Image (cartoon, rainbow, N blue to C red; front, side, top):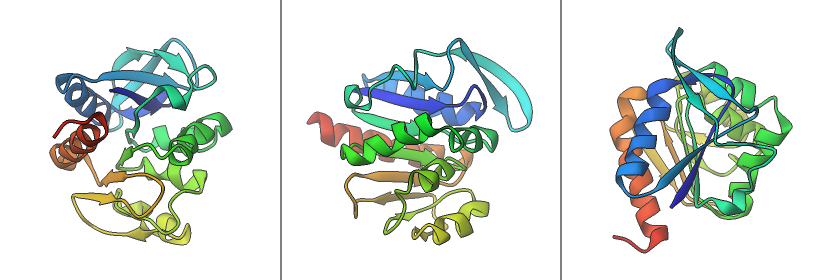
Length: 182
């Protein structure tokens, strides 16, 4: 399984990148860091700079058809930057068009709102996104993880870093389904 992790050059919440990344690796998958720019991205631990990570592919060079799933880590700045980048929004939307699973945590659904893919879907997020999701036609729930299959693909969402275990479990369950595992 090849899984794209879409992040902006800075602002991603480190644990929301590294925890699902490690879960995908431990399950035998291949995570790839896709960003709007080349080089390295700057992760954060809330508002404090944390580690940097090398970009594997830029959005301009990455083809969603080459991936089995998409993970959108949160942080406040990361999805805010992504939703203003037409190529990043198009990259995320393509996973819906292709019927591939998408997993988004915390503030990451902002990118999905911008992509126009939450209408008719049920999801969760950081609580401050509730109005944005509702205004975009989605149904917001305050739950640890929401797995929505009422659209062209499976959409997995979680609220915050405390929900990472449930988020990772739901992501791995979906990856196992599409890879023929149990």
